[in-house]
Image 1 (cartoon, rainbow, N blue to C red):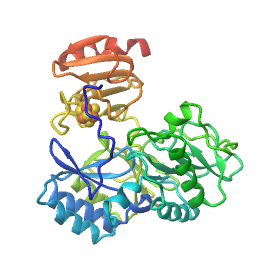
Image 2 (image 1 turned 45 degrees about the vertical axis):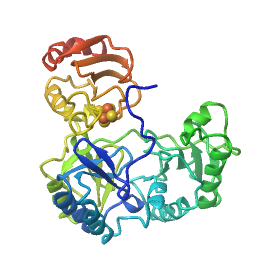
Image 3 (image 1 turned 180 degrees about the vertical axis):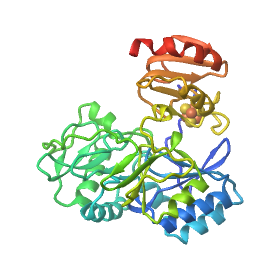
Length: 380
Ligand code: SF4
């Protein structure tokens, strides 16, 4: 039994999730990219039907915040006109696919094939997802998904169950992906409607034919000019609609990524737009902070204002996770230093998750600042 609520499903556009600041409406970009016109429409919809705040999720989706029951139908109509809305909730909830932003013509064709195959999947848990990571080397290794399409060291396509080091050679992507999902269901991967591939693999159950190792993954990139375009970051993965509008006006396709960054496809210079981070040394990039209070109804304290204050005090190699409650949504795994809001200040956890045993409790923001140097001293 946990002290926080586990929803077990992800919001969509057709099935938004209630939050502290209204409905969170999640848009899943078709094939992992947005045309400038679609990006412009999303920005306008955020202003007209939400509170103008747009999140970039850890699954490379865009979330409009502050939508109301009254404005939601008009929002859907506007986005549907741009080809951004699935025909129904079931189709939307199955389209849990992250596509590498560094795609080529083959990847784009595979994305179309895999998207079509998703409609033929068995009934899967709400958080079950796929990654199409078919650049020369994987870049989505840290993204939370269940079935990965990657390249083996010899360039062949493989289907790799998350949590297992090896994958199956692909002969027919659509059929093979559906077969692996069926294997997951038939092998007991689902309990009470929930389950993840990595958990099944950890129990020693592995699909047949997994013999090929993927190519070595690349590290998560920083904001930079990349051969495929300009990678720009957003503090905590959040931007104002005006920022998206300015990006859309540059005329490039946009690829949301799971790294709180957007790729402006084909851009040859980093744009100077308020709200974007283009300096890879910006300390805000080394702080992970969830929505916290008041945006999240489960939040027991502010996270992002505190993060902005603490960023000024971080040493160049220091990192920090600030969580609005013990659920730890923004970084479910362990980090060197985590601050968890408790309603009575903040707990400090070293080398653990947001719900592990703290080494200090009841810290005020001022006390955290005072402690910061000592907190990180062991890691300097
Ligand atoms: S970790 Fe943050 S976003 Fe997640 S439930 Fe708690 S306050 Fe909300």
